[in-house]
Image (cartoon, rainbow, N blue to C red; front, side, top):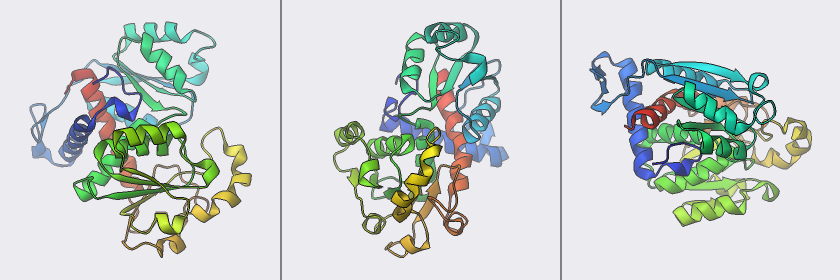
Length: 315
């Protein structure tokens, strides 16, 4: 296992399954008083992080990522310090390597949310404490593990589960493609051909599991055998100005009641949030009884608690 968690592939299948089971044990322990005893949750060792400090460097706004990381560290007995874009000015006011080495002397683990994945890689190369990718332009690995946890809770397996993603290829779909290949789940990406997964993500996914990833540009075909349907915003943070020109291109990929008529199953509905209702998903669908978007959101807390537990304590 790597010191850091920058990419989904920094963990192997065994690591991911362990993290998911640990996160579920922690989640159950929160709701079942007798499940938590002497630092163990259902037999899983828990890191008692009293005195440990998490540094959060966020160049992009956040709700779920920030709250889940801060709450997770607090649940583990530690504390956190938030450093905004203006305070740090990473790579401008001070060089990345100097920030990394300074914070490594003062904190126990660092999470970074930034536009540039290369910034995270450089930071981690100089940091001596674990670094977590809290979102970059390349991947959103914590989100993907929370998504896997949510699917595992529903199906108790990954084999023979079909996850279909509708919309724009972005950091979330990149991480989902790789994560699905790692655990042996079928992942279908469906979006406009000019906004599809790039060749490097496709190659990496196929190298991990040649049968996991499928690309399909017709949404009626893509959703047919889906156990889970997933979507995300059509314009990621920083690209919001392009939404008006993107709308007519992406409208056929909207997750709505009409597209659900083409499914052979009754799929669960996932969205990493925030949702632009009326764009990538309709209000009716995200509010339906098959929507598990807010269970996903809760699981950000538990999986990040498990990730920090593993990176700091090694469990």
